[in-house]
Image: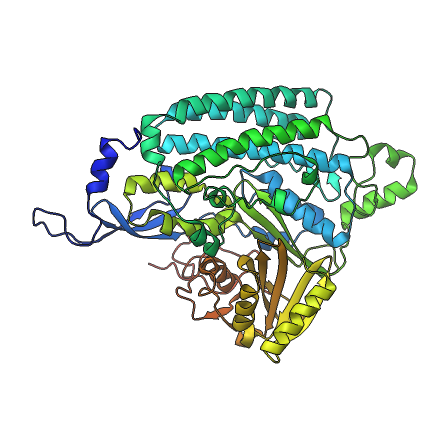
Length: 413
Length: 169
């Protein structure tokens, strides 16, 4: 295997055992601090490393630097005002955050979401998945010393953000999903632009493959590094591309379809060994599968309302306010107090770009949630840092951390 | 999700194995929930894990203020083979908020349990490393409790840094 170069062979010849390696020099364990302001930790993650020479013997993540109390804030706001707040948790997956929350509230309310709204949600979530994976690929390659890939990835990311801006007016934290549907129908010409984008994206992702898949340096950094087996990951509760890289095809979009995902044909990319290279290939393949889903959803986009007709939940259309007293009352009630939700507790899990994103909402019958909790995949997946990088080189730790793809906004909430 | 009958069968099975452990069952919006006595939650979860609910999807805390007992811990279990979920809930009073850790069953419970301890003050007996996780180490109180006030957090500047408790030089 050409990938296993001289460098890697020499590396593997080094003994990882505890006794000092040669020359009679005494070695001792050294504890160093990495972060919270470190370019390779993708946010304010602080790691306390115990090193023996260059080999990581133990690793403790310290988090909480961007804890903003979003779950506490959500308890002070009416249900529909919580959406922009929860969107700011995992700042690369805002459509997923808002969908998990809206889905939980819809489950409590037993609101029927129109088919068109479900399809529009799927299109936006899959665009968001592409965008999130592009940011991951670009920033990971910077960590590995390849700045070129970052420029290419962010070029495509800009195109996705332009699409978000066109459909909702915002590039990030769009507040596009509402309880019961989406806030507005897509503008004219948007569908064609999305189609053009998915075509370009397929082509561009091939270019990324050509750039990275057989790149000697990339392979040396990725192959057989950061390997964690499936059993350990399941024990740690790790989901998403990390689990799929070990060969376990667990994906909630297929396993327990929500939001009309059962209507679309798509494959779940899986890896074989669960090393960093598999993680890269799984996410890379997911970009193409997301393009497939978007194309199918655009082709089959049903006609009809884009938000529920239930006036107790969704705002009436603007034109009705001038003619209908009832619409005006509904509008006033929704904007001042918000809708009330029947008491109960639900847990609503979806597949975010990083794994199972679950939203727990408890209602006490008032117009504000009594508890909102996000089971954020980054928070749980971060526990895999130690098993993935123990007894490896500190340089491999940087690569592994990049491939674990934690988003600290989601970790700290 | 098990249907209402399936839930009762699971609860019946648990009652036989662990007398007095199951306090209540609830089937709400298609979700199955079993309320369990906090002293017996560990053996109950062990039984459920052996039954196929082998993944701990989520572990989170709730404050039921003003209801009593106030604090709650929810275990969202997942059966990946049959794609089935079940929720186990425990409730405990605020002055005796103790529950056994499940880190020995799922090592992934480590961070979530620390978060519940940090935010609600639930003590997980036997947890390997029960420290605050999101709030600073010297923080006082458990901010996610419903009676914890919002606002009033002093912002530290140079002029007031020696007046803020815990920050004197």
